[in-house]
Image (tube, rainbow, N blue to C red; front, side, top):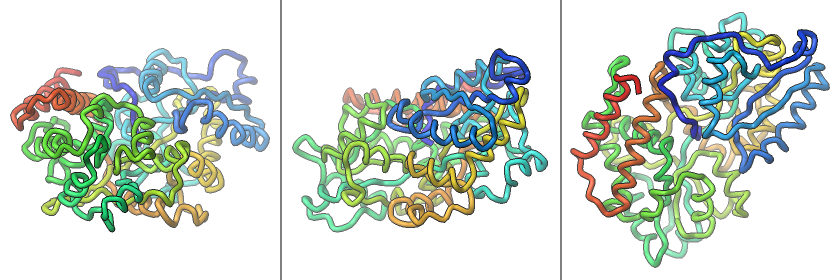
Length: 428
């Protein structure tokens, strides 16, 4: 997923308390749900435009009205934590799937044991890779997959043709070389969200894993290992050494900034999750104008990791006054029919079996689906959300230093990652 929420050290100490969907009589509650949806579209109003007709269909079928609130990623995790602590939250909520184990540790959410899973259609109808990012191993899932995502390399066919480049790069070394050929005259070979801590931690994890990094030794942070340092350096070198990324990218935080540069030809490539297809369409770019391939691996990669299991999960607060209705909404949202509609609208991937629409089995979607099928989850442990914030912020800060022209050494990276590990041990 593309995750933008602000993690908090209070994750580990939040007590689970009674949650409901607000004021009203028990009879009213039985006919009403409050649903916090994450911002998936180009804007919150577009999210509402997509979701409201589907929720109206759910009400017509079940008699249960759904009060919808779409929450920006910058606010979502904090809102969830506050709801868990105060006892006043929604019935159903979307979460970034990498938060699954961290939020599960609060005890505030439904446990999807076998009996509960049976009420939403059973575990077997969900994709195995997406189910790997639903909570801590050995425990019942604390959430269920809703929208599937994975990373890929987008390349602008026009820019490639202008440079006489016939095909996309197949290795990381080729990617750097190709990006170099496409850099010049105020245009760059690649664009990145250098100021996004979530992107920073995703690349640190992916590139570290390619080097064989473990990230955690049990639950003890191992952020500053040589494998992680080398992975972060490779990411920073795109700007610092290879000079194929605009230094101004160190200030970019929003996907739309990448879409603007890529669609206009200012950048010939971008690394983005599959929701980028919908984003580029909103910027007027036809799917035939660009290609997508898995992120090329280094020639000496020790693990073939080209994405984490990205995506959005859905869950219910355990003390919802309308728990059965909440489960019915989750079953509805994850039905093959709704999965087809919603994932088409949001540019994401279905996470259940039984979706037969050919649009998900061809073209760019097929590339992303194949990547997701073999992706690995980020660490499913309670400290994961802190890991994202601390390591992601370290990478963001290092990018900012690179953009000023300062030389960042392996020792600098090691020190910054060690500092992040120590902060996690000290509670954030």
